[in-house]
Length: 113
Length: 114
Figure (cartoon, chains in turn cyan, purple):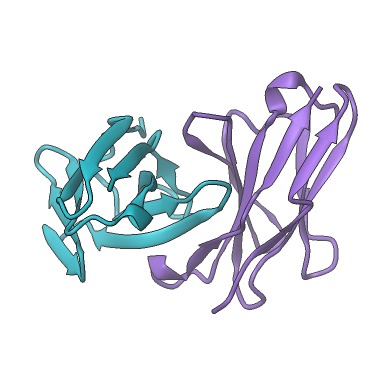
């Protein structure tokens, strides 16, 4: 079946790097995503990676994908207090290709000044 | 920047009442979705809608739920007889069916069933 798991909480100091991890079960996933949710707000797409890639860098964000272990991570360099939010890992299952997303439970990132 | 809008932002209702949550997807998009997020839990897929019909639905989307695109711009989620456990944030999303960067989420409607 389709399932995505994340750790629930991460606390870092401002200026440090944050690494948020995610595992998924669907080996046929086409894309894997990271969404950000700030308090009271909707879901904002941060970045995504196609399943045939193993790394993608976008400014302070680095996504690493290990297909063998079905492990995805998001690294935020030089973490700022404005990065405090909930980060959701998500996948698009290949089956059906209706574009639906399967989300993890979200990792709350707390950035201390 | 295109955006998906949702109304109302908050709704409080009594158990057993019907509610309709409204969404205006991005105009040239082809797929439309509803997701829900019970407080502190995962964002869960409810239903996808394409070409004026449901293309996929989850186990959560039972007979109490229905979706409609009544006028070519709005996309609605109706819950016929609300239960306490329907209390959640409901997100609408739409997708152009291009790359993943063309899927956008609305800000959500927080539904509270008393």
